[in-house]
Amino acid sequence: MQVLADDPEREAVSLQYQWYVDDLPLAGQTNPLLPAELLRRGQMVSVEIVPVDSTQKGKPFRSSAIAVGNTPPQVTSVTLAPLTAQPGERVEALAEASDPDHDRTDLTYRWFRNTTTVKEGTESYLDTTGFVPRDQIAVEVTPYDPQESGGSLRSIPLILGNRVPKIVSVPPASTTGSQYEYRVNAVDPDGDRITYQLESAPPGMMINEQSGHLAWPIPSNQTGTFHVKVLAKDEQGAAAFQEFDLTLATPSSQSAVGVKS
Image (cartoon, rainbow, N blue to C red):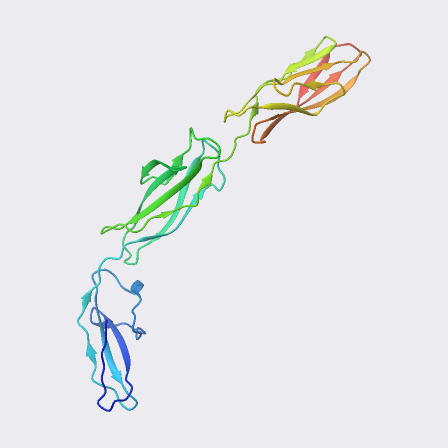
């Protein structure tokens, strides 16, 4: 609104304001601007302006009332949960929205895998089955009230993490020969190449890094219990482990294995 005021004595003129909603004065609203959050769609708004010079007030001027139109809702925040996720897990969008008119606000979700839209609709979650590590997941949320939709807001991308391999083989329970052998076998849910190594083992025990074949030529005079810990690592550095104890009762006699984990 543009306001023009004139004083016959050429004195400086200031203006006093009082806002009205549905013909009732709004307490404390005496500034040139009326905050939109105080209004609702359909209300009638007007303002009364009084010119004031150094000595007196002029005649009040009341503007014509205008109807408050619809103000679209807005999304104030969007985050993804959990903060860390692996392929196959469900990712959920946590969105906050508000409507200045206090209308009911609904949300639609547009899900992205890297730069490709993979899902659209009103569901606030995404199933990442079939995705792979390093995929970037993001969601764009759009609010709408019964009248119109508001602006969209996109989340910060969530990068799917690497899944840990799993050792699926079981070490032989015993051996009667002079050499202990065990083929360690691990699988990786992401299809990564797996390498094997010994973290703890008796002297002379070896494992093939690529095949997982473990061999130990048992010394003829060897007795006692020996702890073995095998690691299976994928290309991203994630590792699974398996531990077991190998007990030699008497020289060259049958050995027994106890698997810890």
